[in-house]
Image (cartoon, rainbow, N blue to C red):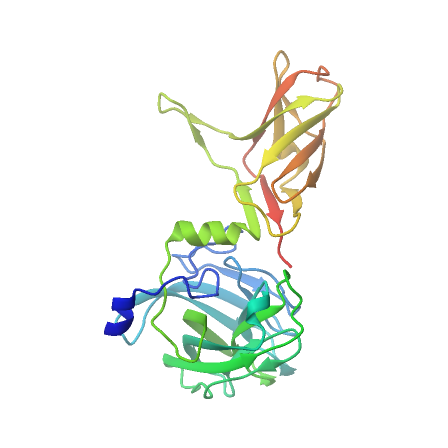
Length: 326
């Protein structure tokens, strides 16, 4: 530990959001331990950013909450618990991330604090050919255990896609309602030795996560005089015709691939401001996106004037999802 501190090594943890702080989708109130139900596809539903729960035919709830580790450190954990049973299934939180050429035929070390009541759980790592379970079996006593494992992974990576996978725990067999896996401070790094956990700031993690997913939520705006305004201004555009506007939305972070852009909450949750006719409701929404931004193609009643500049806002109950996940 002393030598490591002197070296000052950093930027080593390949996992995104390992402290489970970033939760753009709103599935969780991370400090309050909210829950989100997911099914058993792979991936099923992303929970906190970049993490999903793999149930393979069962339903699970995933929650985050503050816990105190045996070291005395207070951190957030992510707990995945089965809400239905199966005679043969998996139960683990997991994360996919883009493979890169330098990863071929390299040794990687996994480490994490894990507690579970399910026998047969181990750390797991996968390339696009095989999955491996390095390290010891995790005791099913419901207590926190620090576990590590080292594995050489190898071939046929599908580059620039999330084909390289870290799964925090793995087990197949009879899954009972109430079986769970809880994870804290997961780390995946190049090399044969588990080194101390790498801490990164919330802002760093948010930017990294937004490379895959970004969400624009409705929030109350504040005027110069301190007054509250019930709108979220998002971009500018112009009236293409009397019933159609084209509006440019620039993303906060360049996306890994051209994303899917979706308006959630109903088309009436987004409006444009006409210079003389005021705020005009949208009746149709579509988007064309590249990795840098999107053109929002909006349909309106016959209240626009072709060629006029417009301003676009979100109203309460609406948000925009910019999804470049696998």
